[in-house]
Length: 355
Image (cartoon, rainbow, N blue to C red; front, side):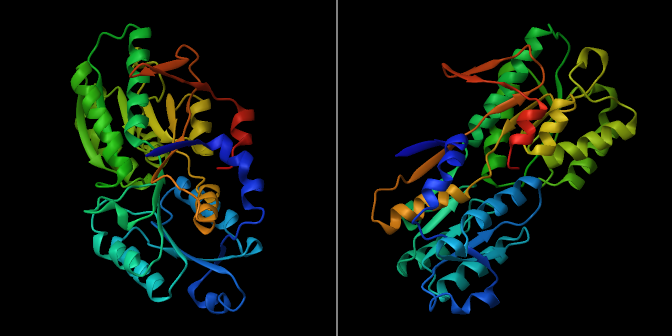
């Protein structure tokens, strides 16, 4: 069973959800020794790292929503982009007999043994953001995250609609800067691009792993410009950090970034819709930015509250997400008969966002 919850609804429900619920406070491993005696409910949270603005926003959401003020002790562990660190943190959480574990996995595979250990110890595991690929999905309690394939399909459909709108008849030559190989976001967004390219006759000139970081986005784009030069007219970046790096490389090379690809500009497509990414969308340097909602704190509040009260929890919870552009010609895209609006970005919208 799946359930889809909108980010706007989450924000509206935060005060109601946290009232009377036991939530986590952010403490280090060394600081959490008195948690049990204080009657706090202890939650171990294994985060991937801090590789992007999106990741930082996700961590902030968890630490803000799950605080000692509301009766929880959060043991936060930064995996520093390494699965072995996350696996170690998971085992430490199990050894400490925490009440709940929250995991944002760097890649989908390699979690079976550790999840089984938690299951055998009776510790509910909440997977957020990226998925896990397990032999038995009953070893975790719930997954909450984005439909990354849909995100990619929406971005590709927007590009298709835009190309038709401007009657672009030349070859569509794409540089693909992917996310961390094997991560759910990379798998879904990459699958969408490859499928669209095959269907619409687009050329993917280069596809390399940018690991969701700005420096690698810049490095890959520099390499692409050297190899393909003026052939490039579209760059598909799998997050805003990579897009920022790509923009830096393009502009330093003397090329222009923008949607006027008929006049030689290079169009950037991005994901996440962070505040910085939306600023670049507003000024036309990112043509379309498809949201990936990082605010998992309120989601976990709701899930843990239901688990504590023995209420039914869906095994999969999808986030509802928006798509943003400053190009007013494309106001919606259609995927499998469903219409998805494209929101026009402005300064007021950017200032209203939490990340």
